[in-house]
Amino acid sequence: MTDKAPLKIHDLRPAPGANKAKIRKGRGEASKGKTAGRGTKGTKARTGVHLGFEGGQVPLQRRLPKLKGFSNALFKTTYQVVNLDRLGELFPEGGDVTVETLVAKGAVRKNQLVKVLGTGEISVAVNVQAHAFSAAAKEKIAAAGGSVTEL
Image 1 (tube, rainbow, N blue to C red):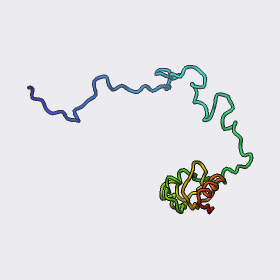
Image 2: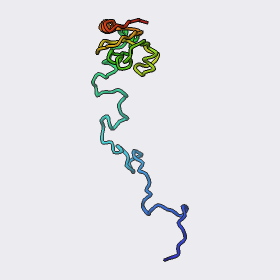
Image 3: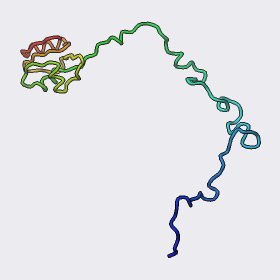
Image 4: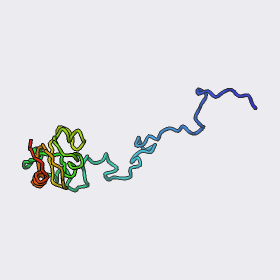
């Protein structure tokens, strides 16, 4: 074995020919000047197009309406829905069903309005308190011997 000194970081040098100067395009005729690899004329040879330009087609921001009309969408009431078959699963023995018990069992999120819908069947008597009910849900709960209270 030959006896060599250990390699040190300050001794490292790039391989010969690895470091080359960056080509400074567009800096005069003597270097890669003039068109600088962009060809001759046209949009791509120039500084570019403005944001939202669609090649002469009427842009999206001009196709859409500006400020006309009024929408009630901001004032829409949205409910967390619970179906009767889900109530039957959560409360197999019947009893009182409130928004708080539904939140505790994970059926709805807290601090939101709850609506009971009539999908499915219920066989136990439940006393349901919720913010809204469908007509079918009211009928089926009453037929099963339960009661309905709107909050």
